[in-house]
Length: 114
Length: 113
Image 1 (cartoon, helix red, strand yellow):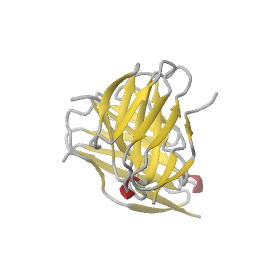
Image 2 (image 1 turned 90 degrees about the vertical axis):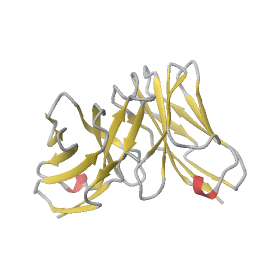
Image 3 (image 1 turned 60 degrees about the vertical axis):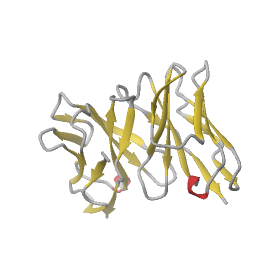
């Protein structure tokens, strides 16, 4: 069975641009969470979506937004990119809410902002 | 602010020895804790979890201990192998004010042959 998949694997953008990252959860999983991992640090929670509704939000500016589609896949959008947005963006899926179920992570999208 | 922290940034052990990785958390209302292993260039991999109504849980070569009195979590790896070399994160799940998963900074485990 396929695990969590993310696209693209790598991305280079310049400051001020916009980026869209995509995630497909494990089949049957209804929850998707997004994390930002800066080099040398632990993942920082951005959003959790369950059944297409936002169920949790971390301390990130409004430039970060996300949505979940009827097939439970998800997109993370970041507007007005800053150099500090360079990081590994991880997606995780779970059967139910991430606070109650095991999360399984994808390989991540590495974003570099120049 | 509240955080999940780790006591040691790096840990070096001899192959075959047992490893113990520690973690402190600050929110006594948290009820679900997870240990993840992350190898270079990969996403975190689930190792073992424990809920707040338990003190100990065992898996294959791994044991997680939860001490709610002092808000401390530990991961024990028996007979550590070179393939165990990675960064280990503890994570805390909080349901108040919307669900959040809070990760610690990580401990890098080096296994010496």
